[in-house]
Image (cartoon, rainbow, N blue to C red; front, side, top):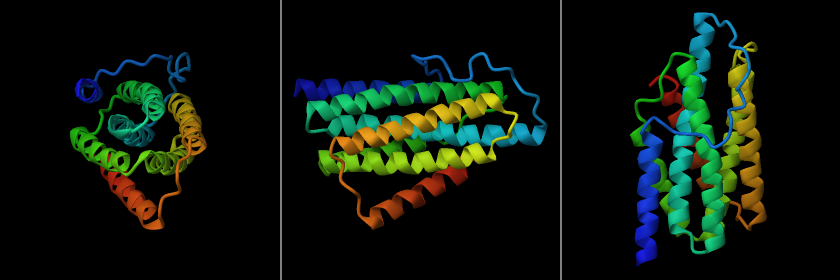
Length: 209
């Protein structure tokens, strides 16, 4: 019982830190030291919109990993989820910092995104550890594709945003590989389609709000 209470408190604290607007990275941003490019206003808005979407993705990642760690049956899976969450927290801090540099803001709907992702993470975790790992695999593969599309859409001269997205893409791929190696099960096609639909709704909305 005490262990459950501790995990609930940890999850609550992580949620508050995620939504506080002041995340602190444990690693230096990939954009550190890169010169700030001159962007036309349309290019600045494009970069900012894409980084806002990426920031929302990291808000959701925090919620998913915290919920899945909370419901994990095994200590090894709980530790794996916690490690991934720490790396994703760096992504959260990097994207938020980049938004400030672009004179823009995070999504106004971040509390809603967090709550929805946390509920989905709880459902995935309660299905069992191997299904939870399979959910991580599918999520990270979809995120990897999404980040690849952003690299095509970001202004070529926006080296700072591109460096962040490239590092994030590499690490999302690594998370998927680790979850697959740990025994993640392939998700049924309807679940994958539903995940893509939810992601499309989120990215379309966060692009503007």
